Image (tube, rainbow, N blue to C red; front, side, top):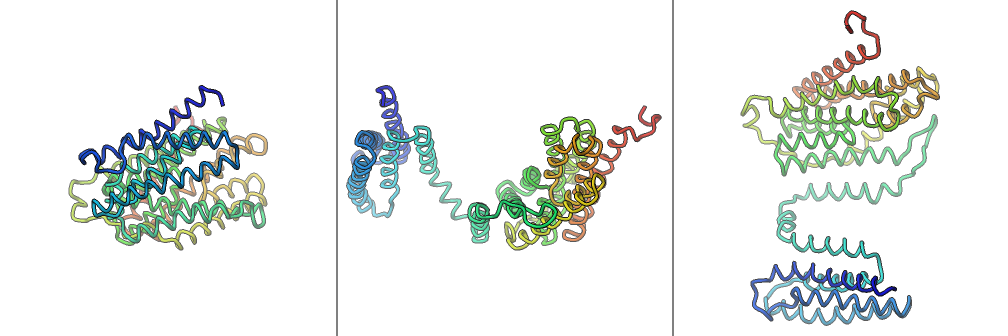
Length: 432
């Protein structure tokens, strides 16, 4: 190792100690000198000490170096444990934070000499942030409910335990269905529901529901519709606000499809963009009216409170149903050629607009003409929007269903009208 690199790594080890020591020293700044186990100076030296152990280990090679570093960490941990134990006895408390922080500082100091400097620095910053957020994190733990914790753990298990072991190959006839993709749909449904729950809880009903819808629309406006319909049916919120969330998700979905087409098949953009952007404007206007256009106090007597972030089994069943829809869409596309591709796209649009948009953009102009590919994409968006009416009527019902129907019909009307003009189907007199 060159001298300049060696000095840089020691400087990083020192910086790690200073960063953690600054947080520890600031937190105990009002205590008398000599009454605390470790402050900014002790942590700075701890980082350097770890760096020295790492440098010795690097010099001695794999086996000898590992032994030296391991023994150094063990010896340092034993000494620090004695001091922290005496501090806890003097203060009559139980806390291992100082000991754990000192051990982590020593270990990161050693890693700065033998490993990736960027990773060591990032971990040190993350540790300092965690230590500094003691009060907010404790308050958050006190405020969290058991259903929230349970749902969060289920969502994490779905994402980091179940998803990696899901088969990533298509199963079944006509191209089949990818189980991993279906499980991703389930994760999106659960994630959208959980995000909406959290945003409403911490930001309030109007802003929280609107932001949840817009954020959910980046992944799946269908998921937002299903979640909002269930909330409305359970009486967990204002039907008007929940419908506004669906409108916000729909507006994002229309723009998202345009972005995908622009990136993959820009030749289709002149045919696809005008109707979709017109629908997006209508949906955004409906969302804004749902949140800000209603008479003041119209919903004041009703407190919005979601009882549970999401239901696991309902999410899984709906994702499986969407997987079946995808299979039917592929069947229609393969059996009936170009016409079937459009019909299949319309069927698949009930479940996944993005997949249709990507596939159709890639098929033009080799297997499909630009007009056919554009029509297939618009058909998928059309059925996806129309499906929201069905979800609202079957699950949400009442005012929620009426608001969704008005929004969806207005979006479809605006889109069809713009498509009529821009594709040359409108009479010349009208287009002039």
